[in-house]
Length: 129
Image 1 (tube, one colour):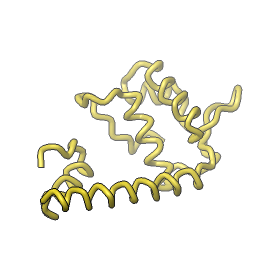
Image 2 (tube, rainbow, N blue to C red):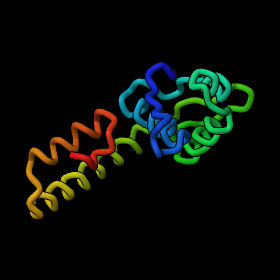
Image 3 (cartoon, rainbow, N blue to C red):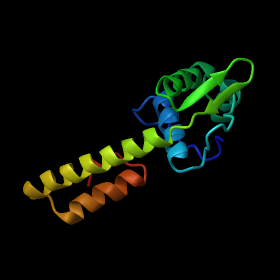
Image 4 (cartoon, rainbow, N blue to C red):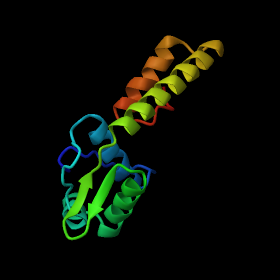
């Protein structure tokens, strides 16, 4: 499960938030399926070379958000959050469309927007375009 994680140890973003984001992303992309067992906190911490408390915090946030659930003595599993993710994607796309329209009204060019999108998707923060 953690082979595809992209953790940036130099980022200003906390590692637990990066783990949270990566799990949500993998669920959204269908790489993690409902009912699939996640790596244990210790396994993931060991694989990433980080403190288990960091992974535990990410898992707690994921559970509070409804993306995963825990079964005592069995581990953590991916919850069926298909509806939640579809709604989140739709609202995000609407917000993005609004922001692009606002940027256009302010004279931001299509090339500038595209550069920010590409930079963001390639791991940059998007502010240097």
